[in-house]
Amino acid sequence: MINKEDRKKRRQLRHLRVRKKVAGTSDRPRLAVYRSLKHIYVQIINDETGTTMVSASSLDPEIRQRIAHGGNKEAAQAVGELIAKRALAGGIKKVVFDRGGYLYHGRVAALAEAARSAGLEF
Image 1 (cartoon, rainbow, N blue to C red):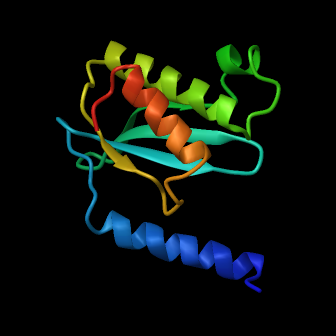
Image 2 (image 1 turned 30 degrees about the vertical axis):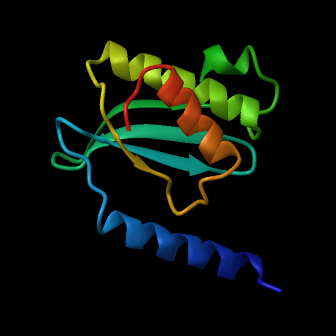
């Protein structure tokens, strides 16, 4: 059985492997996902300047009012819609998706699909 530290280390190694290939630019920034047990966080990052252009999470007040628990698919969908809305308002239409070493399944997939359906291209 794999313990918690090994699982975390394996995810970090997967993330580093992906980050060698995926980088955000000013015209196509990186959409980075982080998930914890209780919440999900997403940022749109320009790696050329090292700045976060837009961010959203299940801790945002407009999501907290609608959703009781931030660690489920419904919260991930709400965060995906919110990040797409904020990105489009900021003039960002195309992004590179960085799943953060997590499997493209469950909350990560729900967030990505919601962001795509709300207008982001990746």
